[in-house]
Amino acid sequence: MRPTDVKRLNRQWRRRTEGRLALLVESVTQPFNLGSILRTCATFGVDQLWLTGNSADPGDPKVGKTALGTAAKVEHTRLASTPEALAAARDAGYKVVAVELASGAVPLHAAPLEADVCLAVGAEDHGCSPALLAGADALTYIPQIGRVGSLNVAVATAIALAEARRREWASLGGEADAPVGT
Image 1 (cartoon, helix red, strand yellow):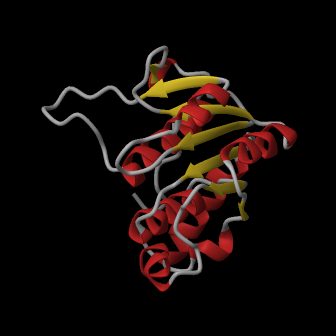
Image 2: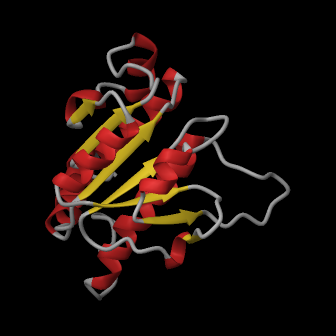
C-alpha cells in the first residue's frame, strides 16, 4: 500500500473507534520494552498511560530507539506509587483490568474489556505487584498452549490492547474494511 492509502485506512478505523483505552505500566524497567509499549499505545489509540514503580523513563534514548517518536503521541504521567496510579485511572473513569496469570484471572477473550478500560501490566520478571492485583477491578491472562510459560511484557501488552480494540470493533458489526487498492 502507498503511504496515502495507509493514512486513509487508519482514518477509517479511527472513525469507528469511540471507546477510551488506557494503560497502567508498573515497574517495566527495560527501556526497549517500554519503547515497544509506547509504540503499541500510539498504534491502538491509548488515551492515557500511567507509569509507576521503577519503570523506565520515556525520555531515555534507549526508549526512543524503539518508540520511534511515539512517546510524544501518547499522554503519559509518572506517579509515585501503584495505589496513586490506580486512583488516577479510576478518577479518570476507567475500570482497571490487570493482565497477569494469577488466581481468579479469566482468559483474555472473556475479560471485561468494555469501553473505558485501563489495562495494567507489571514488571518483566515478576509481573504485577500484589498491590496492583489487589487494587484491580478484574484480572485476566493470555491463554498459551506452547511450552513457554510467559510472554514478553511488551508482547503481552500488544495482545491485550489489540483484543480490547478488536472487541470494540466487532461490536459495531459488519466486516472490516479491505485495504484500499486491493
